[in-house]
Amino acid sequence: MKKLLCLVLAIVLCFSFAACGNKDSASDSAKKFIIATDKGFSPFEFQDADGNIVGIDMDILKAIAEDQGFEYDLQYIGWDAAIAACQAGQADGMIAGASITDERKQSGWIFSEGYYDATQGMAVAKGSNIKGFEDLAGKKVAVKNGTMSNQYAESIKNQYGFEVVTFSTSPDMYQAVTGGQAAACFDDTPILKYNIKTGELDMNFVEGTENEPAQYGFTIFDSNKQELVDLFNKGLANIKANGKYDEIIAKYLG
Image (cartoon, rainbow, N blue to C red; front, side, top):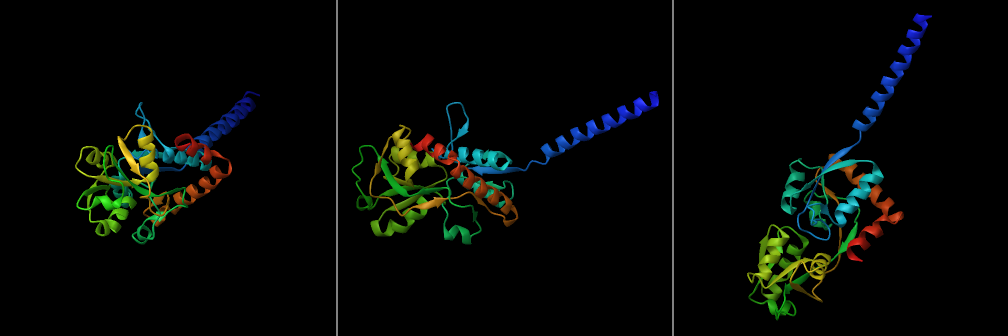
């Protein structure tokens, strides 16, 4: 009888350990990625008063990860550094308000479906007498290196006779304008308008300076990581369908 009880107990314990092992294994098998992002690109990614990384991109990424069941470590390292990290294999993907363009696709960027339409435009310091591109002749215009705003400024600089000066971060670019080192800056329209509206930028947006809209996309730089783009696309479709996407946009942009 004792032998029988011992045998039953052994079987129960065996199944218990197996169940625990399977649970841990399932947890360990959850997909985890390293995602790089820009710095100081509010309202898409920025630090709040408590030091948390927040914004439209951050909320979209979080909602998609929850919907698709994957985890991620965030690298809040800046535009150029985020691109370099992905290209070097130190990060799996990047979400940083990156506009989807044919030029970028041809140079190795692999994009998700677009998740936001944005234009680029121009802002000047308060009190500036610049009312449009015609007033920029002989002046310096600040842009962030490698961005659509950079390309936009380069495409019209000869027409209007201004000089393009590049910076690695948005705060440095803005400082150049408010500090008088540049007459204006080009940046994504929602970024400029949001920061001016909230008082973060002591500048004025120059209406009528916007270009044609382009979509932002999540991006990878290695085709072997296509699974991450597929997960992003599936999750994006789901959060648009269930209303979560609209909630996120309204939270920051109204």
